[in-house]
Image 1 (cartoon, rainbow, N blue to C red):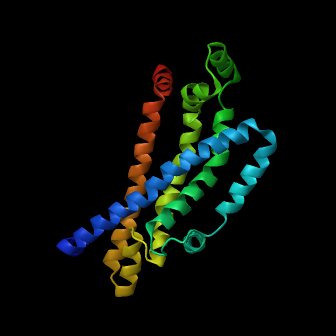
Image 2 (cartoon, rainbow, N blue to C red):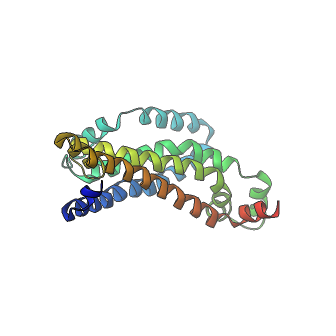
Image 3 (spheres, helix red, strand yellow):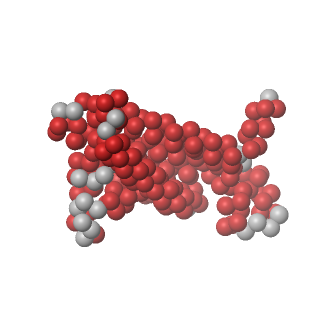
Length: 218
């Protein structure tokens, strides 16, 4: 491992692939959350759409990621090796994974708080952003953490179709019979997932100071 990192070219390669991995996993996570929020809200408010949205999301999530990476270029006309294919695929995976948790998180908000906000003059959109969504964060945070780990692992699959990320360390390591490179790729992937998870926990605590106060008070 020390010999591997003693080479400037290896260090440069690892940093480049790590940067690509962060970009390819976290951008779809953000976009997927933005897509899942209105879909989850719709599933919460429109009863007859709930089963359709959740069923469609469940079916979509069963599609193998490698197949989706290959199908998307054919549908959109994008180059096979374009990173946009991974971003679109993982955005859709994230949204599919989060539709139900968003609905459950919004339904966990006490009805009397929603009623009180309405009585104070909060209209639907403002009430959703300023009251319901913030109170739903503790329930939603767990699902977003799962989605982040899922994205970080799925980006590695993109290396099989020539798209960058830490997965390239795996494929190149196997091709060159270079175990150190494979180990570096695995360790960095695990560390990246851990760091992102810790950052999401910190963000959750920042957004829910009342939860920390409740814990301290108890």
